[in-house]
Amino acid sequence: MKKTNRKKSNQSNFAKLSIFQPQKFKFKKKCPLSLKGSPEVDYKNIKLLRKYVTENGKIMPSRITSVSQKKQRELSISIKRARNLALI
Image (cartoon, rainbow, N blue to C red; front, side):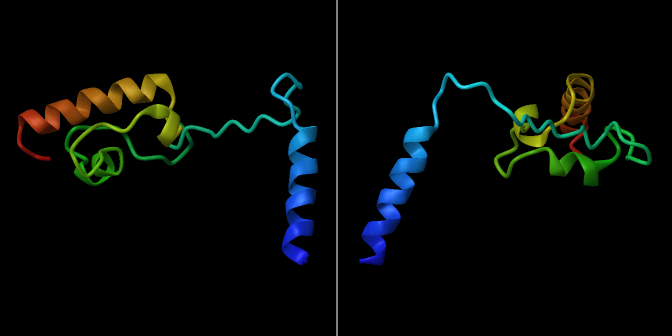
């Protein structure tokens, strides 16, 4: 009986949500590479670059890593340079 009660309560909460309601809380993550004391983006810093590359070797998008546009461009350029020099 408890399971059926849960379903009803979840459905009622879901019915209250609407796509057209204004978002009250927008959480914006800060760029981890723009903070004080953060490591510098460089093609020689392989340990840092590996965090932003998938297992298949693709560069992760900024919406997943929450990196700013400026730092994302620097990251992509340095990853490409490291690939050309066979560091990655």
